[in-house]
Amino acid sequence: MTDVSEPTVLVRASGGLGRLTLNRPRAINALDLDMIHQLQAALDDWEHDTEVDVVLLDGAGERGLCAGGDVRGLAERVTSGRAEDSALFFRDEYALNARIAEYPKTFVALADGITMGGGIGVAGHAAIRIVTERSQLAMPETRIGFTPDVGGTWLLAHAPGRLGEYFGLTGAVMDASDAIYAGFADHFVPSANLDGLRDALETRADPSSPTELVLLFDETPPPSKLERAREWIDDAFAGDTVADIVERLRARPEAEASATADLLGELSPTGLAVTLASVRRSRELPGLRDALEQEYGLVMWFATSQPDLAEGIRAQVIDKDRSPRWQPATLADLPPDAAASALAYLPDVPLWASSVPRG
Image (cartoon, rainbow, N blue to C red; front, side, top):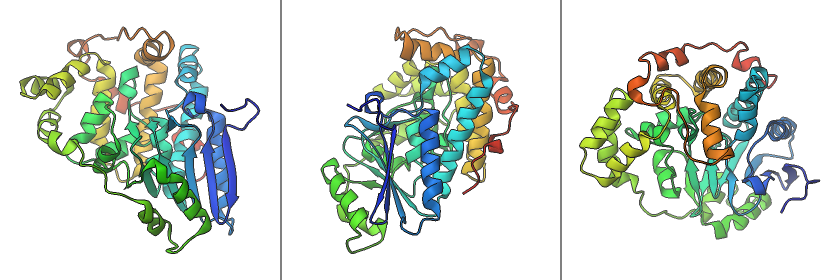
């Protein structure tokens, strides 16, 4: 258990290795704005520090790297109409995501255990992304009437086939094998070997490059179940609209397809339609920063004008009655231009107005 006096991010450097440990284990290291600023400050300090040439990110405790952003705080900002506070959080979080992707020194992320939402934002864009047998990766935003962000749509858009639509819409959890197959991770290292890997990165045993060191601990994961599921996923999630996807799922013989159709029927129609459009449009964008900019407009559209986000957080996180009352309640009631309206939304303050510079 972390003492309340301890920092929420542990920052230290030794042997050329800069270590960042998210340190809110009771909250599965969920990110708040102060943690984002601490991470930014450490990267600023180390960028031109000749004593640090590799950065390693991990999480305290046994449950996971990071369960996401502080959704309770988000719900409070949304329901109290504090749009400026929401905008500040997202701007600084997305600037951190981009900085990790562009960082001039090798950034290694240990996505051990639960790594979801905002956790994908700090791990999924690292130069070297490591998963273990305990890893559970997901972009579960549609479960709370929201849409994937933190650069998640960029990763989803570049997953094989229609896996991006599948994981974006359903929020399904990937194990280590799935994460590597889908392009969310690079290497499988058993959790028992993580301490050895940390020591090797710090002591620079031969071979000396970070990738070569990781390969000393890398093992071949079991085959991904996604390989067997691609047939029905690619067929169904090629539908033009969410309603088309559900119809295709109902027509498939696989039990998993039917269960997926049932799940989509429980989620926010608005969140689903916007997510489908966002992932597909991200495929046409030139880079991560462009996807982050698109996501920023979408999340501010949700935070300022849509009731489903606050309602989803209430139902899933606060009251935990698991009975959200979506508005509109069904896909049939969803205005046909809902996704287009979201994509056209322009926030009052542009994303890159954040004080954090390009890498």
